[in-house]
Length: 69
Image 1 (cartoon, one colour):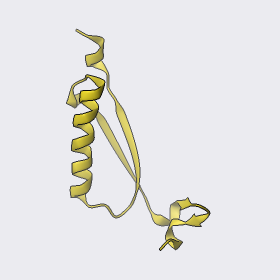
Image 2 (image 1 turned 30 degrees about the vertical axis):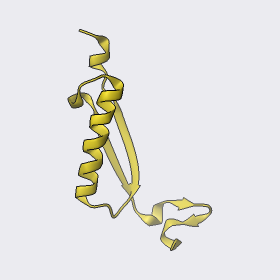
Image 3 (image 1 turned 90 degrees about the vertical axis):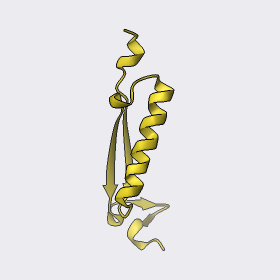
Image 4 (image 1 turned 120 degrees about the vertical axis):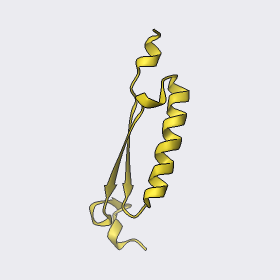
């Protein structure tokens, strides 16, 4: 068996809370398909981990996410 078929890519995504389950479902589906294609592995070998962060726990350009408009 080709070694490339045993690769188990793990993708970690950090997003702010508030995305719908349908959005996350689509994201996982598309990332799985494209990752398997690019990495030349099987889709069932691809792992996607989604971490949701509340706006009070991240910042950008010195501004807390909670304070952004």
